[in-house]
Image 1 (tube, protein in one colour):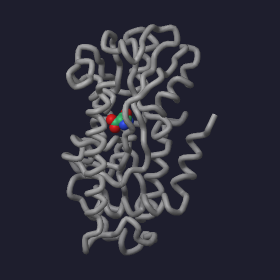
Image 2 (cartoon, helix red, strand yellow; image 1 turned 30 degrees about the vertical axis):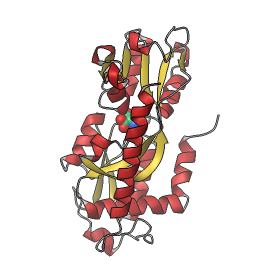
Image 3 (cartoon, protein in one colour; image 1 turned 45 degrees about the vertical axis):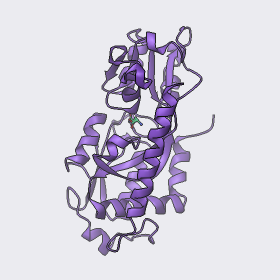
Image 4 (cartoon, helix red, strand yellow; image 1 turned 90 degrees about the vertical axis):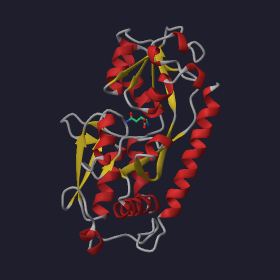
Length: 278
Ligand code: GLN
């Protein structure tokens, strides 16, 4: 796949930047990511957040199993529980603000939320606009089609592709053919992944490009529609928590808490709750 080389280069750049970011966290006034667990005491009191005593997380709760709404409309999912555990470590109360994916990224950039968690892929473009913690998960873009369709990885350029607006799936697919994309004329950006999948079911698009885990969830949830995921995928992406650029104190506190949750097994317990081998 010609797209591969370009994305590999991007992935490399992202890894490099993440390495730099990780390297920057050891400054003299900063909290090391591996610092001992904060008990929500003095450290937390000093943390400045959008709303005192609270940690606002902007997200798009239509990305299972990372974030979705339960039957009563409350946000649940891996990102939501990890954010709650981070907030607890920092002595803060988590507030989840559900909005569009693009809006969730903008909310941290504009200082309206403290962290953005939405299965957000770290990319070169995003690193120019926001800071990221260490990565906590990986994903790849895959293609969902109807079981009886003639769409393949090779003829996608002749088809209509649905994606979620502002996501890496949208960005890759709408890029020019010279850059390995299919061109904007072949891509429709929807407000959420769920709406994109509905458009596929309704026959408005021939395929949906979306991250692999939500893809599996959507295929499962729409069993009657006979959806399937094509063999083959783009390069692996890293998910991380996004923060306003330059907010080093909060970045280091959140990153430190995240790494503690990884080290003490809490993070894996949350993941295991939502991702079961079946
Ligand atoms: N990982 C993709 C991105 O960051 C999609 C995220 C999402 O749809 N919530 O663009």
